[in-house]
Length: 149
Image (spheres, rainbow, N blue to C red):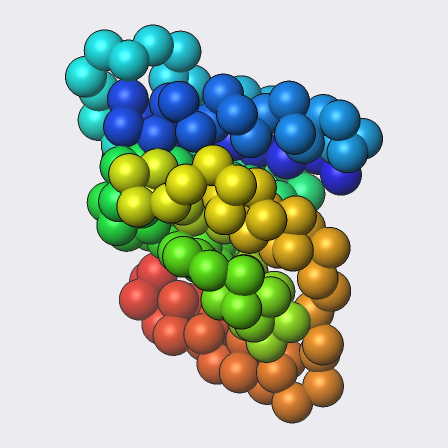
């Protein structure tokens, strides 16, 4: 799977832990930055990750900031993105199984590395259940289209 990843300075250390984990599992990783701990703005990186997934350049994305809140808001402004801020394994599983989340959002300052890697693993391995859940995804898409006029 080709995975877009991006973070602001608050998420940078966790991003640098997740990248080799993804590569070790056989995924291709496209890093959209940031590349330092210098202060920067999370909307830039949320948009880049969201666009890569929305445009089909990457299969899924991972976006990280300090809490996950700001970058979650940013990534979800990109049409076609269903970014899920997950703080535990159950949320990761359900975001994929029920919501077909295509971007995982993490808060580096609220998760330990071990938990974050477990969340990433579960999120990547869980398939969308479809069926009645597709109707709900279609509803989300209808809302998005209504406001994209």
